[in-house]
Image (cartoon, rainbow, N blue to C red):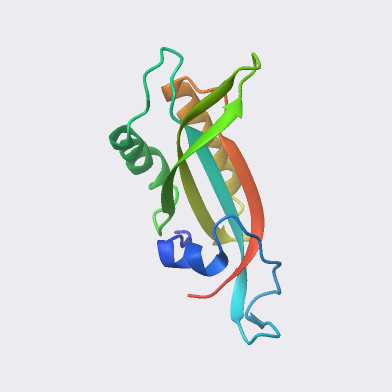
Length: 142
């Protein structure tokens, strides 16, 4: 079992989109915050399919339940937003997007492969060119 935590309160505590340098296991910063170093992976999933239809929030929830939760059963944070990106033909696509935030111990060697599999499954199932991945190291406390 993973010691993954990604509940909304934790995402807010570490700052959505921001990085905090790791200070080591159980380290206390100058501000008195004691925390452990964890990896943070954010995955950004687009929703527009090549035929113009969209991956609905319900479809994405099913994807998370079947493809993500078995690998990260201890928790995650799911956000919805609107984004844009330039595809391989140079077209700018504006679309609804889904963001998953995963926090897991730095020593979890299986996580990388599981995350790559999630990305590949989504691209295959919903005919997507890519799923953006952003990794950082955070200091967290539960």
